[in-house]
Image (tube, rainbow, N blue to C red; front, top):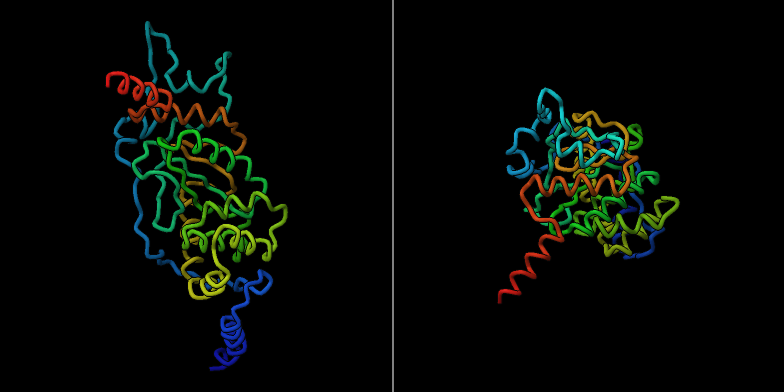
Length: 289
């Protein structure tokens, strides 16, 4: 009873704010303390990546070594990722393919049937993570028919239980504006709460929805972030950012060329056509007509 009485002024304030209909970003505030999450995951069903990605045994564990005349020769993967001196340009963990849990609260962009799954593990409050995030964007833009881009939360600060940028990311996803919100964040050098709310509004989420969902769905959003944190921890990931391309890890220092080579390899491994091959096939088809 004492606890309820203490919370009464705050509840009255929220109710009055909802009635006022104020639309200014400064009038909107994220609940300062997160709802304590429990061990029960949010009402989300995990999905596995398409079976065709894993049907080749070489992609479920170590890639096979190839020997000719007693001498070891490079595999296609080693050839595609190495430079002219035979040294890897980026330390991909391509000998191990990880199966990553995807939930219904996971933001996705692209076709579910896309042969290549690019999963970014990052924190929207992590400004230094943006270069790798922009590389993921560029890859999706160039290979939109072959790639599905997904986002999983990997906190930069594991002691920051109330992460406004990530919380509002879940709110944006709830309103189907996650990727627009994420793009708006690129323009921010500082991530004050007022700026985050403004980014949400620019992304297409109304002030009324921000105000209402920040309270009515707070527990759901925090539990989703908590579920992501536990999921990526099982992968051994502790610091953002990282990309996984069909389960193959790409580190934060990767360049666009590094990532593109791995994406193109994954496309061919899945038996799909590269964009230029699709274009050529279309021209051949139309030529016959």
